[in-house]
Length: 510
Image (cartoon, rainbow, N blue to C red; front, side, top):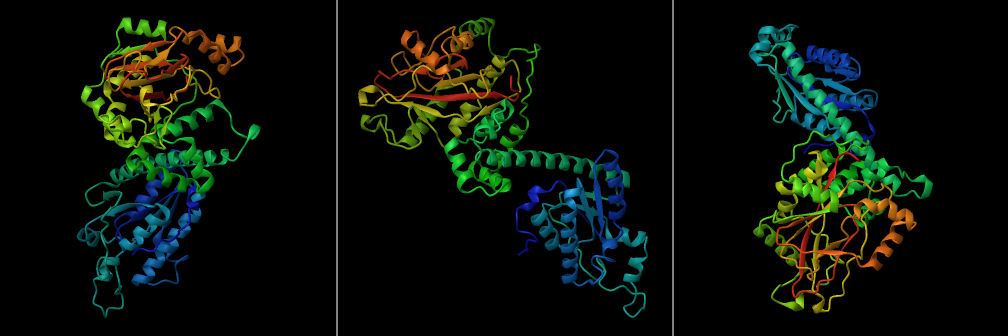
C-alpha cells in the first residue's frame, strides 16, 4: 500500500503544479528539464527545476542508496517542491526515482504528473557521458566500482502509467522538448481552469453566509451562480444544505459534485461553466437557419411563442412517461394511484433522477437546432430541467400550478431567454394545457413600470382572462420567450398530463 505524503486539502491554495520527470541516469532528464524551463520562461511562465543529483549533495546528503533511502530522498524532494509551488507556475522534479511506490506517492500527495524519459539500457551504456555505467560494470573488488547502481545492480521499475513518455534514444532533444512543452502548457492551462473553478466554489460558499450589501449582487456573479446550479443539477435546498452543514473547502465541494452526478458529467458541466462569458455581446448576423422556416420565425417574433410539431418520436415520449410513472408510483390503469404522495413531486413539477429516456429528449439534436435558430448562435448548452405531471381534477387533485406569471430573475433582469417543453402525449385545451398571452413579450418593461412591479403587473393580467391555451400533439415542442406571461392550466380531462421541460442557455449574457 502506498502511503500518502500529505493528507490535508491545503494544496488547493497553491498556484503552481508539480511534475515528476523520471528516467535512468544519462537518459537526458537534466538537459530536458533545463531546455523545457528555458522554453516556458520565454513564454512568460515561472519555472523551477529540482535536479535530483544536485539535491543529493545538500537536502539529501545524509542518505544512501538503499530502497528506504531512495524513497526518503523522493519524499523530501516532493515536500520541497510542494513548498516552492506557490511561487512558481511549474516545479519540475528531475530525479531517477526508480520505484513505482514513490512515484505514486507523489501523484497522490501533490497531483504530480509523471513524465518518463525513456532510453534503452544498451544506449545508456554506450553513451555513458559521466563514466558511471563503466564503473558500475567493473569487478566488485575494483576500487572504482559503483554499487547499487540503478539499471545495473539496482532495479529501475519502468513506469506503467506515465502521463507522457519521451524517447531520447530515437527522438532528438528538440523533439522531446517540444513534446514536453506542449504537454505542460496544456496542463498549465488546465491548472488555471481548476483554480478558476475552485475560486468560484469558494466564493459561492462564502456568499451563502452573507446578507444585504455584503453579498455580491452583481449581474455577472448572479448569472454565473444561476447557471452553476443548472449545469450541476442543483436545487437551492440541497445546495445550501451541503454548504451550511458539510462543506469544508473547495476540494470537498468538487468531490461532492462529482459524487452527485458522476465523473464524466462533472467534467462536462465544469467545462461548460468555465466557458460562460458574462460580457454583453451582440449576436452575429451571420447565421444560417437549420430547422425553422421564415414563417415560423416571423410568428415567433410577432407572437412571442412557437409550437414546432412532433419534434420527438412517440416512442421516446412514451419512455419518459414511463419514467415519470415509475418514480411516482402511478399506474395509468388504476385511477387510485394518480395522486401520489412523493417528496420530489412539487406542485406540477417532478424533480427527477436522471434517466436515459429524459436525456435522449433533453439532448435531441432537432430540439437543440431549434434553440440555436431562435438564439441565432450555436454557443448554447442544455440545462437540467424538471419533468411535469398533473392528475385530472376529477381524481380529487387540487390544482397546484402557478397562476399567470413570468420566470424572470430580477437580479439579472429581463433578457432574451427561451423556455420550452415537450408534450409527452396529446394535450387538448382542457387537458392542463400550457397557456400564455400572445404578443405580450414586448410589453414587459412598460407593464412593470405602469403597475410598479412584476408581481403587481401579473395580478392585473390575471384579472383580464386573456390567456390562450396551447393544445398540442405528442412530441410537440412548445417554446416561449422569457418576457411572455404564461401558466399551466388545470387538467379537466380524464387522463394525467405529462411534459418534459427543456432549457438551453447561452454561454454569453445578452
